[in-house]
Length: 355
Image (tube, rainbow, N blue to C red; front, side):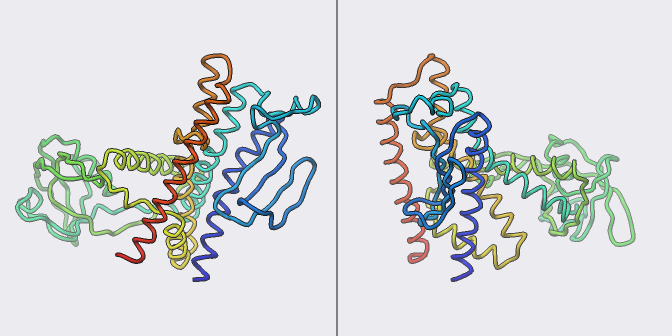
């Protein structure tokens, strides 16, 4: 229990700190005064004031905020504070300040993945067969468990991903596979077969296969700093794309909304990953950071994405959206978030007591 609670606090603390740090740094870059930098909500636990900014840790760890001078459009601003007022900065500067929070969440993921790839390399699947499906081309060609594919049509194969890509792109054309079996090497002809299958989202897709499964054997491929950075960007992009598709599928009803989890689920997973080791725990933080970044750019008025929508409208029409419209939109946004929190708490509790 202690590990779960402590891991949960550490995870939230890191994610919130990086998110708010993005807002804070870009605000200061553009000369906006920051009154408070808070980790958490509610009553202040402890803190320290440095210059204008009061850096505090508050009692409720489920969030945080950066309070800037003149953040509210209808706030009374003294003439001396106008140069450091958020509202009085150019709209594109305000867009960058708001966008910096989610951007820093993606940046945190990139930094974590870079550290993992630089320290451990990239773990990739070997093109080694773990199982052969009867009746499909690989079985008919005589391929067996533990066979390793080393070439396809003369192209050297190093990873399972390379091999799968060539088979998928074959469009059913004949492939010459060079196979290593124990101490011998031989070639076989295989014609991939098109089948109907379901992807991870349950969508029906058609793809070309030869009927083999991976053995699960991996090897670590060392990466130089440039390769590690490139891989970290690619990994962040792939996971971001997967999260966005998942959200769309939930809206469409393809994926059950019961898969959504709240703080309880996050705490359980954080504790589990912490018990599995530091690398798993840090990787989990990167995944959550990507999720938080995407969540915050959703066009819900109270979130960063909602603020960005209003600023983009302002940039187009040449003046701010009326305060009344913004207030109504923010009230609707608060209602949406409250309902969402109730729902994910219900999912968490149902998962614990009824599964």
